[in-house]
Image (cartoon, rainbow, N blue to C red):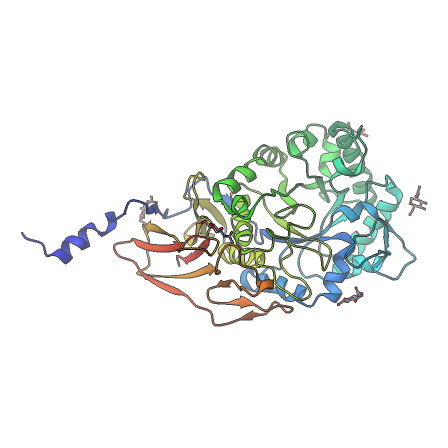
Length: 472
Ligand SMILES: *[C@@H]1O[C@H](CO)[C@@H](O)[C@H](O)[C@H]1NC(C)=O
Ligand SMILES: *[C@@H]1O[C@H](CO)[C@@H](O)[C@H](O)[C@H]1NC(C)=O
Ligand SMILES: *[C@@H]1O[C@H](CO)[C@@H](O)[C@H](O)[C@H]1NC(C)=O
Ligand SMILES: *[C@@H]1O[C@H](CO)[C@@H](O)[C@H](O)[C@H]1NC(C)=O
Ligand SMILES: *[C@@H]1O[C@H](CO)[C@@H](O)[C@H](O)[C@H]1NC(C)=O
């Protein structure tokens, strides 16, 4: 029998994978190695002293958080803390949220007090809140008083931290062992004063494990101190350039440093989170952190973190008006918000996540599964750097074992990896953007359609782009 050229092509199509294409079989159901997802894995951290400003004096805050709730049905988890939590003293007499003086509006205070209204404000947030309290001053009476106000006024209180990055606030003889003993003692004293177990977000170091971290801390705990721990947290700021941050294989290696600590936490039956994180420490790097390329890092990083069982990733937001990595400010959106939004859209309503690529290349492919373990979405990411000069390269991702006949997808893109919304180069996700100052969605939602032939479809993803593929 002679076959026509069309018939031959039809027969060959499933195998038509060009050199340079990457091809993945989408599992029909979640593999046993897939990781259980938190309902809201993408979180936001607010610097302690700046939290009231974000919530009362920065218009975009509520809408930026609400946009995630619209996707997932759950308000994103927030954490309030940071360097200034260890400079803060609870003052029951003040009616103010926070009281401090600074030389310039973009300075962080070296000392501050806060009142019970601080916790009342945190209590108004419809999502869960982790509140970071002071251990650096070594005044447990003051910290217990603050914890009692938090506990009694906040129905949304998820956990309390006792000290932020203890390795950097204390002097040289404050070793991991000395700090662990202090944490263990404070967990018991604060937890028992509240009459509440599972209440402390423990750890909170920024220095890398295993010297500082959950495994090291857990090894020092007895059953009593451990009973007061809700979860273990670490901080992380990978740093580097736009290229190094956005490169998928670098993100995979960077996040992998927490694997042993995650296993240690899981061994105690507790969760593990990145309690404070962002691209570059100290508010970000001016020419790196606000870029779209770092937005792509933001997306890949939380997917990768979720993949290795980091339950929530809280991206830090510092001083209003001097914060290069912030997702929004008073006047402008940051390009990283788009990556966080795309990651939230990818995981929304998902129950499991797995990765199809091996983590060693510039191409990433994640699959998110529903509660019945059926594939819900795939997130394809081409992390090759495109800076706007010359021709933009493209990567073909060939997905097979698809069940739909037509697949819809949303593209996350911008003019280049160096695009910044505050410089007028506005990213889009599914054709839509977020307005400066308000964080409302603008533009018409746009899906791209791709035909599936014999269970296979090919998706082109440009250098420094991602594509969210809807599998149901
Ligand atoms: C492809 O799909 C079929 C039917 O849904 C399923 O039996 C098979 O296991 C899938 N292949 C893989 C690798 O998951
Ligand atoms: C609110 O923001 C403005 C700047 O837009 C600033 O001048 C003012 O002090 C802020 N108020 C509070 C309470 O933070
Ligand atoms: C510790 O806190 C308590 C309660 O707020 C306060 O009365 C006391 O003066 C503080 N101690 C020191 C040494 O600051
Ligand atoms: C647990 O450790 C704490 C110190 O962190 C100690 O005070 C307490 O006695 C220990 N409890 C038991 C049952 O060993
Ligand atoms: C962009 O990359 C090209 C090389 O691909 C380089 O020659 C050029 O200087 C870069 N431009 C910017 C703005 O970084």
